[in-house]
Length: 128
Image 1 (cartoon, rainbow, N blue to C red):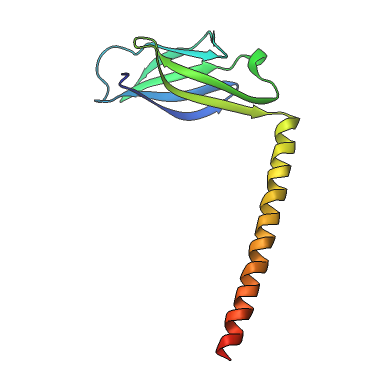
Image 2: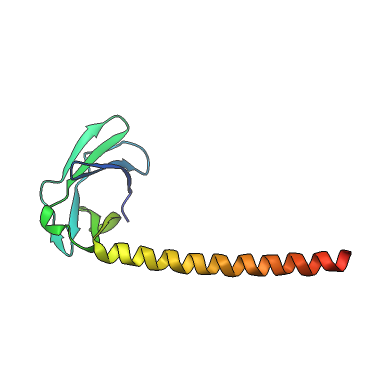
């Protein structure tokens, strides 16, 4: 089992960045990690020193960005276990999904409002 912990810090200028720590703090040599997208290794991944851990930088290849959800797996190269992952979501399909979800939420909220109002009227009439 991998003792690596990876925490996302940001995505900037097409580079995903995170901090790697070990379960017992910063001990041992620089960890080896690999990042894959749909089973293909991402090149240019770097791990650099920082106080208390290591900085992980993953350049997001332009050819992997497309409509829908794209997931990138971060793997501990020494144990071949998935340590973390990150996803990018883009495109028109997503916008349509969000609109549909919002419509469903609005309909549910309207239903709840009607039921709550009915409840208030029924319980208020019993007290008077």
